[in-house]
Amino acid sequence: MLSDYTLAAVSNNTNSSVSPIWLGIISTLLIVIFTMLYSSYYDVAVYTGWVAFVWMTAVPAQIIFGLHMNFNSPKVLANLPQPLKGGAFCSLTFVLMIVGGGYLYFVPGGGMAPPGPFLIMATITTIVAVFWLVAAWQCWPFTLISRDPFKQGLMALVASFALGHLVYYLSFDFSFMVGSTEYIDALDPKGFFNAWYALAFSVTTVAAIMLLSLFENWPVTKFSSAQPLLGMAVSIVSLVISTILFWLAVFAFEMDPVDYMVRLPVSIIFGVFIVTNMMQFQLFKNIKQPLRGLYLLLVTLFLVYTMQLLYRTMATYVVEIPLMEGAPRYEMELWVATALLSITFPVINLVSGYLSFWPLKR
Image (cartoon, rainbow, N blue to C red; front, side, top):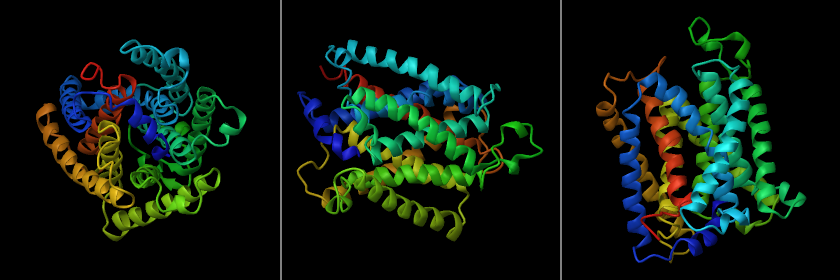
């Protein structure tokens, strides 16, 4: 879980004359500005297609290197000074992007260009699987096979593609798209659930895991702190939270599943990484759980609201044409989701993990 990497993150990221909180705030603002400038170069179709896909292929490796290895393995790269260390890990990530992205593009994506909903959703499902294996299960059972974090991470990475593939083909059904120009029958897994509903619930489970991380798995750790019992407990609690949140939003309050996904789980994941990674795990550090988790949750919820408002407002200035909201195109929703998690999220990992805030912090 994220909390298991907190102490390591703190020890590696507090040697600075600048307050970690202020450094995180300044870095976050710069990242948001970069995202908006970068996003202005692309039209909506390319941005939510090729741009989203290419950037998302970096996320599985980023999760492995950051959450599991804390960029301390392999040692030959970890011992390099910045920015060489960041560059070396970026090079390794690029190799894994080509391999993983190639698999996603040619297998679930069918080698079709430009990237359509089949490829994009399969990619997101793979990212969801990585979060589960790393954040909830701490790369178990691969920790039983090898003591080397790098080998554990690579095995978990391969397993996440297999798990994501399985979930995608069992759960996602695109029959609602029949008749549209984007529908390709041969690529439709014809799973058990409407693809938008399956995707929204999947992303919700990651948001639930991230929310638990704010409390350092409290109160789950009171019953077990070792795998596999911890993973089982976190999984059960996360699924319960996800089911309640999804049912209330989509069925009780009748929110559109895509609008719900972008406004809540996507924004929650984004917010959690700001209050943890970007703040170098220093926010409210002297407050004990569960009170610290509650404070972090309140800040996260504030970011959920403000970032949604900011990105939706900026979209009207960055994109030259008005973005349509809601079905069937979901232009605004997909643009915001791409900006938040496909672009900003990998850059957050790059700045806080790969480069350890270099050159703002030396």
